[in-house]
Image: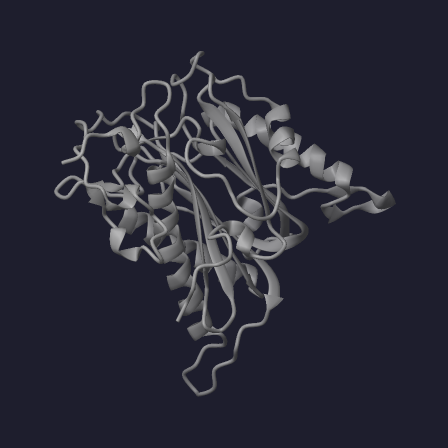
Length: 334
């Protein structure tokens, strides 16, 4: 039976580090996932209003196999500037795609969410240094959740959004995990019950006291063009090809679709990256109709989707009220 990883976080996948930079006055921030040795990477974009960088590079038919980091940022189009700081920080470390004369080109895909107008100034003062500072803060172990990093200014279905993470260790010994910044047009909370749609996925009481509450929701906000987006990184220590990593990213979107309703709307830019560090080989199936590794990919993809749903719930339950956005923890009980 699958169990939660040591930290119930993306960092349970060996070789990954997570760092946040948060500016509460600006109601915005940056989250980075770093893999110094590089990880096989791909991506799947489902929302209709994405803001991204280096996603074409991650297509299975394209050259580069591995990424050294992924950046998730607030600030909408302005937030892409944070990636420059991450690239230069990694280059200084010597982590990247090898070039001549001992230079490297760090591969840093990125995606942004819309949090404009929620802080002190309409446009948060995001710059390359935000990405640099998030990299400086990156570490193994427990990952802070709630109103931090890319989730600092997040807003989800009328209540405060946030950053969440979750992991699973499968019977095979393979670890899968998810990290997500929830800034969705749809709601994580079922209005009929006042509880998260996917509350039954809880393992070992991970949702804590807040997970036992049923709350009264405020009226849903009026939808507006491109003002939302849920961003995620899923990861595994399994050895995957880029095509397999893309399939895992696709299946992880099921976790968004179950935990946020509606999801992948015209006003969201929902994007999930997949990183595979490759320390554990997939088992082989035998038989005329057995595609290589198909059963393993099914298992990893399903578990990753569940991790994504759990991470989304943890993001909402851990969020704190900020900049006029009321968090779940401050809503009235039903």
